[in-house]
Structures are given as structure tokens and as C-alpha cells.
Image (cartoon, rainbow, N blue to C red; front, side, top):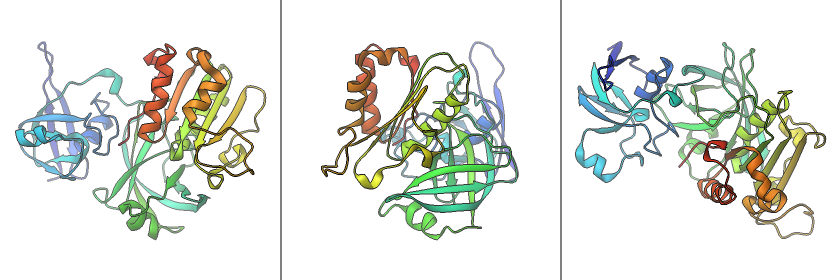
Length: 338
């Protein structure tokens, strides 16, 4: 099979959306490549936002145990995740399309060559990939990286740099003890090796604005927040930019220059906090990052356009704090990862 047709009926007498899907593409990637507003969040099987109903035809499932499908979904038998299925011939599916999911940059499948791979902190790796085509994305987005072919092990990683016409993509990858990607893919990476890339995905993206920008990061969530901060710094119309980074110990300390950011001053500020460090060598803020942001900014957070990335519990705590100050949900931007 070279390609299949995906038919998505629309209501109110509107013509159906038609998507052509190549044999190596997921239903989600095919739809986003053609500019269709297919709902999604994590694009990696965890959240369930891209769930659809299969009305006709059959599909291949790439990850049978994907947590985005509930036991009830599995019992029904015709509920699937668009990010984890490929069509086996022409199919008809039911899903509520929405314009806000239409991709700002079409999704592509690429091959990246490892140009740089080196330790970033004690448990994170800095990875630079080079493609033969420009690195096109909106700051805040992520790619699915994996071993070739694309149906192998894949994980979502956000870009840490800016779009680059020369095809340079920058990432920070966290080592996860016992993780399949960490052991089976990252463990064998070296300069000159190839990685499959699919994307860009993500809706928590920077857009030019006049408001001050607040970026709150934890762990490897630092990557997209660095990208957003760098985009805001390059935007002469943006207000002040504040980047808060929550880490655990002194082994996680990073300096702005290491991130491609300027020294704090003028309209840029950088605050790092440690949550599990008791040693006297650290003189900066201590505590969970949402507490540090609260103490530093308080009710003034409502004046900002806010971007958040990090572990789910951290993101949830930050969002609760923001909503407690009456921040409008439309001004809080984050992608859900599970």
C-alpha cells in the first residue's frame, strides 16, 4: 500500500475533510501535514486528546498499551489514537476538528544527522541534529525523535534553539534510568549517527506581543522555555522577559550563557531555584519553582503572557498558582506530557 485516504465527515452539510496518508505516516501526522485541525496534545500516546472513532476500514496500532486509551475505549473496540495508528487502506473516522489545532508549520518526516552530543548536566544531554532542509518550527514546539524507521521507539523533545535556515536543531534530552529511548537509542548515539524526526508538534508557542513574558521551566522543560525566551528577546516589541528554572541539586545548575541567553540585565531576568539542595554552596532561591515565582512576582503574574514546561506535577502546581491569582487561561500556555 503506497497511500490511503482518510475521510473525516463534518457536520451541518459541510463536505468531509480528506487526508492522504502515506504508509509510513500516522493518521495524526498526515492530517497535520495537510493543515487539518486534528485535536492533539502530546502526540506520543499518553494524553488521549487525539482519540477518534473508526467508522469504516481498518488500522494498524503502533503501541497497543498506549495509556491515552481507557479501558472503556478498548472495550468498545472502535476507539483509537491518531498518533498511534496508521490506516490499512481507505478509512472513515469521526473526530471533532477545530481550527485552533491547525499547525502553524506543516508536519514533516526528516532524518537528522548527529552533529553534537555531549553532557549538559549530570542527567541531561545536549543534542544538535542537522537536516538537509531548514529547521522550521515555532519556538515552544517539539519533535518526535526516534530510531529509523519512524515506527521504532519515539519520544517527544522540545527544541531549545530558534528556527534555522541551515537545518540546525538543538535539544536537551534527559536520561531516564531504565528508559527504552535512553538505553536503546541514546545509548548508541554518536556524531554522524542518524535519528528519525517527525514534527513539529505543539500548541504552546510564542507569538509576537506587547506583554511581558514569563517562562517557567522544570527539568528538561527548560528547552522550550529557552526557545521561547530567545524568541521574545529577538522581538523588539516584546516586554520584559523573565525565565524561572526549577531544578533539584547543584548538579543541575546551568548559566544563561550555556543556554545561548544573555547575562541577566535590562529587560531579561533569569532565576534558578533548587528544591532538594541543602548545601551552603548554593546562595540562590530554594523551594519548588511555583513557590519561588509566587514569592518573586505574586499577583503581578496576571500582567504576563505565561509559558510553562516541565514534569506534570510541576505544571499542575504552577497552573493552580496562576489561576489563584486570576490569570486568564488564554494567557497560560503549556503542552501536556504524561
